[in-house]
Image (tube, rainbow, N blue to C red):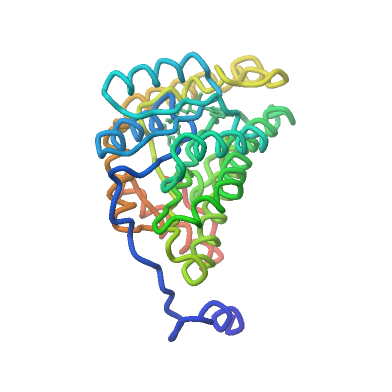
Length: 298
Ligand SMILES: NC(=O)c1ccc[n+]([C@@H]2O[C@H](COP(=O)([O-])OP(=O)(O)OC[C@H]3O[C@@H](n4cnc5c(N)ncnc54)[C@H](O)[C@@H]3O)[C@@H](O)[C@H]2O)c1
């Protein structure tokens, strides 16, 4: 334990980490948003556009991407839209190249694209695991890794990796999603510790939403061949899924989530909680683990 504390505090006194300064200026800067054609991603694009940022929106859904591009252009925004499958490194590299070719820089990166839904462990096949881990985890890794040299070259930059409360509280029937989102939390925290001293001009946040009223309930619209629809693979969970859909449609608006996210960047928050009540889930889990007790459920 002491060894880790010593290692962690190297370069800063008393174990305190230099967390860097928040990004001061959004206007005229460049934001890249994956999953930018729908939901939280599109709301971020609208909010950042209103702040005067140049926008790069990336999405695997070409029709939705075109519609989002048209909407943002009609609102007078400078926007580049590029079809991208974030699970493919070559697509993310092409996105980074296109962003730099068009705007010359990237200051804000939102690794936001995501998919996932409820299914029991024994009905979740390998193709479904590959798909959900590919988008939710590899998409974030590719984004961080490939955009890093570009972000590092800016005077101010910030990455927001979208996880979920599922990254800190593992739900039943949500295994690939839980695993990917917990990994996104871990990746973001590790990067935050490392960059606090080595790259303080590159801020890191991890977004932890609970229910937000988006099209995520229809995530299978973008599923690859090989994924068996959950309604077919696991019809026994039909009633449970109905409750999930109702919960999502009663969730926060993506616009509000985008505003909270921008505030989180301005305050350089590492963990951005869009639903403050979910902070209690962190405490409950930590208490249960520390006490060696069975995990309580909400
Ligand atoms: N809606 C919620 O309640 C909620 C809660 C917690 C976390 N999240 C997370 O928020 C993020 C945004 O989701 P949302 O709720 O706005 O859903 P959404 O379905 O409205 O938007 C997700 C977007 O990602 C795109 N996408 C899917 N696969 C892709 C791929 N391979 N490459 C590029 N783009 C791809 C979709 O086409 C879609 O436009 C996701 O990471 C999701 O896990 C959502």
